[in-house]
Amino acid sequence: MKNHTVLVTGGAGFIGSNLVEVLLENHVKVICLDNFSTGYMHNIEPYLNNALFTLITGDIRDLNTCKYACNGVDFVLHQAALGSVPRSIEDPITSNDVNVNGFLNMLVAARDAKVKRFVYAASSSTYGNSEALPKVENKIGKPLSPYAITKYVNELYADIFNATYGLNTIGLRYFNVFGRRQDPKGAYAAVIPLFVKQFMEHESPIINGDGSYSRDFTYIDNVLQMNLKAISTSNINALNQVYNTAVGESTTLLELTSYLKTYLSHYDSEIANINIVHGPNRVGDIPHSLASIEKAQQKLDYQPTHTIKQGLEEAVAWYWENI
Image (cartoon, rainbow, N blue to C red; front, side, top):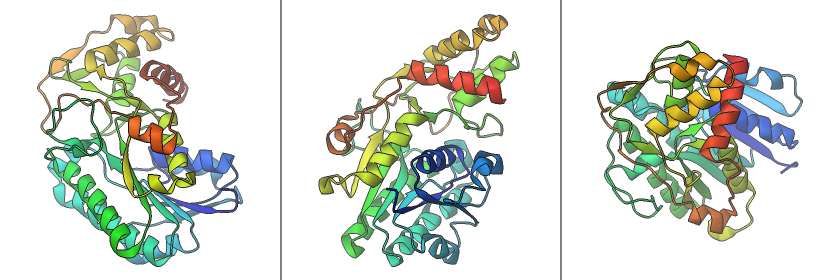
């Protein structure tokens, strides 16, 4: 990869900035495209003076910006999107504009620039109301939110762009990614950084429902590995596919809060005594999510390095130092 250029859209965000970091560590030339709507300059500030790093401030909803960013690029790691099921329910138009129109702009720009491979962030929300466990890539249900619809449409567009224009794509269905740099603030903060922040401030986290809902929480390092495998694989049979990007381990929300209290109590013993509050189930949420990672293991040689506990221990240590 050292002689190639990689474009990371959403490169100032949580996952994007971690991708920028690992690529630069491997001496890869990186272009970051971000409009800073959900990303932060402080996530990429350490790289601004790196000769291998270029920042483009712009929006994927503008086709000309996408074309400019793709010029001379070998691989695209498309992370730019508006996440969050609740956000999409409150404002479906903007979520669709960014996640569908912006995605289509990036596909067109990548096609026109003759990009070798377009790897994009798909979502486990695509499984919708399917009750089958574990989740297998070729068996999905009906989407339960506008966000889920947008991410499924991404997969359909990627498939069409390969079939029609020959653009090689790989979709990575992220399962509840967490880890360093994930923002604990704001109305749409993900559950793990939000709970960590609340515990650290001696507040009681609110679990939606009775806590029995479960997720396949996936540490950032596993996600970085999947992206690197996706752009570097020489297995042509691995291309133009979607892959679960997870650890293959189910954790309930009650178990999650218990783990967080344990690890945070190493820094502040009072956290062990904080009570959990229960609220109503959230609209658009699926009860359970557990991934089969067999396809990724077979075709991309993916081997997760972090279980939920290992990831939480590292994440808690990072948050303790940084928030």
